[in-house]
Image (cartoon, rainbow, N blue to C red; front, side, top):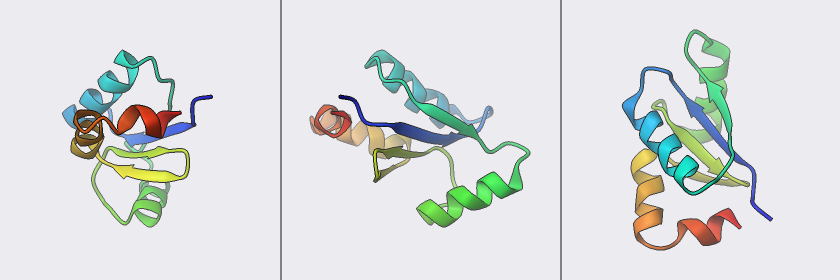
Length: 84
């Protein structure tokens, strides 16, 4: 069973597009929370991740980090096990 994936993102962020592209390529569905124009949602993301940049990605209860972190997990062969 696949874990829930949540991504805080922006419509104007190329890193968000890249991260979502990898997830789609892997057939992973995710819940996207767009922080554009929503200061309270951005504050929530910053409180949970302690980061101010998007994307911020969670797989289950694990905070993965951003796009580079997601791709690093993929290159290391650790993304698929984390998703299941």
